[in-house]
Length: 359
Image 1 (tube, helix red, strand yellow):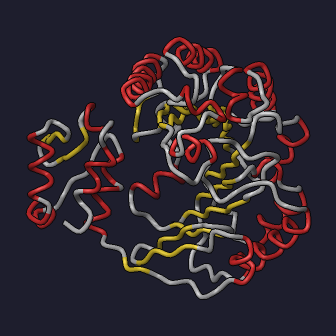
Image 2 (spheres, rainbow, N blue to C red):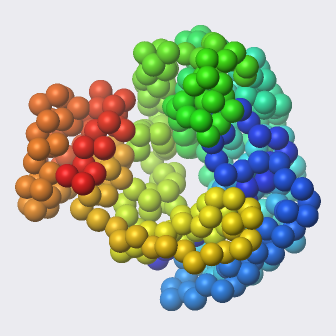
């Protein structure tokens, strides 16, 4: 069965670190977008019902209730085994949580990013640790026990002490899933542009260096393991049985279909994506599809999983050069027929994956 991703790109404010196709738009743009997305969903021919659903953003927890209800009615939803909604802290209420449950949602991902007030304010976030704790209690009271908390390593002003304090909150709140992302400097975010241009806004001058950021990530790996959260993918940690079923589809090359702004799709053979600006999305030009090289993608997608992959004889031969290079460097390790990233290799994963493209 396939997964479904639905993009809701609207936010109450744009975070400084965000490089997604999202932001603050007019009410009219939001109404036009909701209508266009529903039309896209209703035009889809479903050969089989999806079994996972993921609302990403933006801030999907800001979706009007009638729109969420219409989305659920526009697609087959009877066979969903997991339905995730991304939430920004400060948007969860008892009434909203009860409505989400009644609508079929059973997993919430909270974009906390940090529990340090100074770090949060530099990103533009307005919540506090106490708000997060209160809203997690609200979600659990509504029956939503499958919870994820997002954290970012490498935010401006972040130190080992402040990072350990954030991880202490994770231990206190005891979510069954945590995602730890490393901040990457690029010009698609305001903070990234400021760093590239040598500016000081948004705390750019206090951004941790690469060595410190790597140390923060390694600290998280150890602390989360001690809390019973095993790393099953480079950025994702979970208790047994709480791994994200939807996101596993990406890494296991299973089909998924994206709807909305900048949403990507993969049917097992081809990849395609929607436009990444509202005007282009409203125009809905023909979508170009590209054939997927499954052998190539198994390495730079599948190797993200800590269990690794089991290459075929043909793949061992085709990718012998990059495999040998990174095995010799200690960045990959072999366990019988399995190939996986080593602990040190995880930190160089992007560089390693590049060697498998067009090899």
